[in-house]
Length: 483
Image: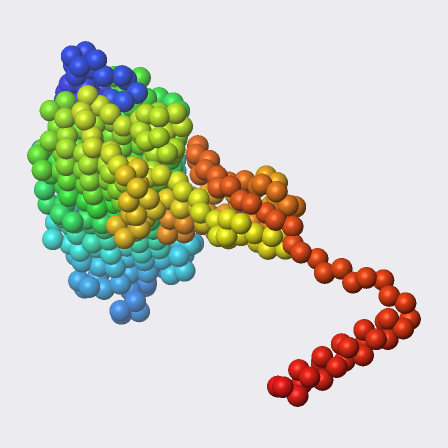
C-alpha cells in the first residue's frame, strides 16, 4: 500500500494533468526523502564475519564489520575496506570519518532489505552534524530492496564511487530507490557512476543543502519501462551547481499515474527557494533532458553550455524562472528547429541565444602540394558572439570531418574546450568542400585548390648535359664562397 504522502503526490500529479493538460511523458513526480516524525530507527547490528574486513588507518586496528570499526573510531579517523567484497547490512555513521577502499576496487554489498519509511529507509544512515568523506568504493544493492543507499543528514563528499542496483519496488507501487538522499547539509559528489537505480541518483533536498557541487558524474537510466529515472533531483529549497555530468536513458513512465522521467528535475513542490546552476552537462536519450517544476513552481535555473540532444523534450519548464542561454541543442537552428531538441513549457524559458557549430579553414586557397588546417567549434552563439571566455560545452562530443574531393585526417575526433582540429588534403586541382558534423548539424567551407607549378628540364644531348653540370657546380661553389 502506498504511504499517505506518496498517494497524495500521485493524486496531485493526476489532478495537475487533468487541469493543465500536460503530456504524460513530460510530467514528472518529485521525490521526498521521507518524513522522520514517528519513524523508528533500526537497530544496526550486522552479522559478524570470520576475517577482518575494515582497517582503521589511524590506529592500525582491524575489524570484522564496518559498524564495529565506526563504533570504535575517533572523529576524524580514516576507515579502509580491505576485502574485495564486504557484505554488510544497515550501517549508522554517528561521527565524522573518511571511508575509502584500499585499492579503489572494493565493493560494499547489501545483505538485507531496508525499511520503507523514515530512517529505516537508509542502508547507510548519516547523522546530523557528521562530516563523512567517501572515496573509491562501490555500493551494490543487488538482490535486496534498498530505498536509500545513503540517508544523509550531515555534510561531506563522495568521490570516485559507484552505485548500482539501488532499487525498492522500482516498477511500483513505490517506484523508489535513491543512491544518495542529502537533506541535512551540503554534500558534494564528484566522478561517481550510477547504474540500475530505482528512481534518483542524487537527491538534494531542503534549504540546508547550500552550494553543493555535483560534477563529472555519470547516470545511466533504465531506458523504457514502468519505472522512473531522475539522474539528479534538486528540491525543497536546495541550492546546487552541477557541472560536466552525463545523464542518459531516463525514459521510464510510471503506469500508476503517468509520471515521466528526466535527466535533471528541479522543483519547489516540497518547499520554496530551489536554485540550480547547470553547466557543461550532457543530457541525451531522456524523456526530458531538463524538467523544471510543476504548475506554480518558483525554482530558479541557470543552464549554460550544456549539450541537450536526442531527448523527447530538451527542456520542459512550468512557471519557473529558467535561463538557458548558450546551450547546444543539436543543430544551428535552435530549440524546436529540425534536428534540435525542444525548449518550452507552458513556461517560457529564455534559450536565446544558443550555440552554433562553425568551421574554419586556413588557408582557403592552396596548391595540390599543400594542406589546410580545419577547426570545428562550438564557441560562437546565434548572435555571432564568441562565448569561449564564458564557458565551454562538455569535452568529448564526437566530430566527423569530411571533404569532397579530398580527405581529412583525422576523419573523426572529439571536441576539447569546444574545438576540434583536422587537416584537409586535396585530391587534385579544382573546387573542394570541407565539412564538419556534430550531432544533427553539418557545416562546410569552400576551398580552391590550384595545380602546383612543375619545373620541366628539356632533353639535352651529351654536351648539353655536361654544360648543365658545370653550371650547377659553379652555382654551388658560388653559394659556398658567399656563405
